[in-house]
Length: 170
Image (cartoon, rainbow, N blue to C red):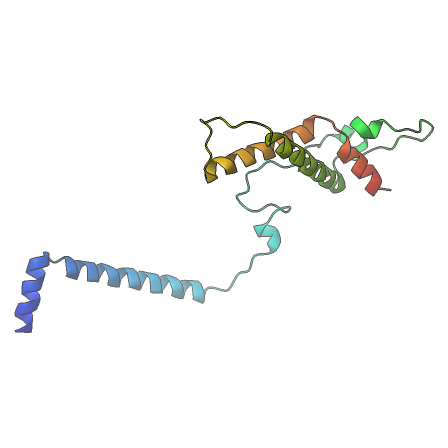
């Protein structure tokens, strides 16, 4: 009687229940084989330098200051911007190694200040009704202004990074 009930049930569902069950068993078998193969391999570990490169996460597509200055002339360049305006003319002008990590970090700090300045300026702008006010729109706009700050820091020559570098390299 049970066999007749199963056949009647399969006839009603068109065999979909048996097919689904069979597929689940195959998928379960494949998954358990995958787990066994992973566990049987020698455990490999990754160092943090393989996961995170120079303080940036994998997939972080924002531009940075790494590799901004690479020429030989950048190893002994003169300060620019506010750092070039030294009050004491009798003091020997110091050279800046723009290819160093210290200068890169100085640029990051200058970029942070420029971003703060831009964010305060952005608050004074009236928003258009056409502008997106949702989470994604705000996030995109914030990323855009991050890139503006990075670009301004690299190209405007404010000199704040030069002053920071000179202060810390003494």
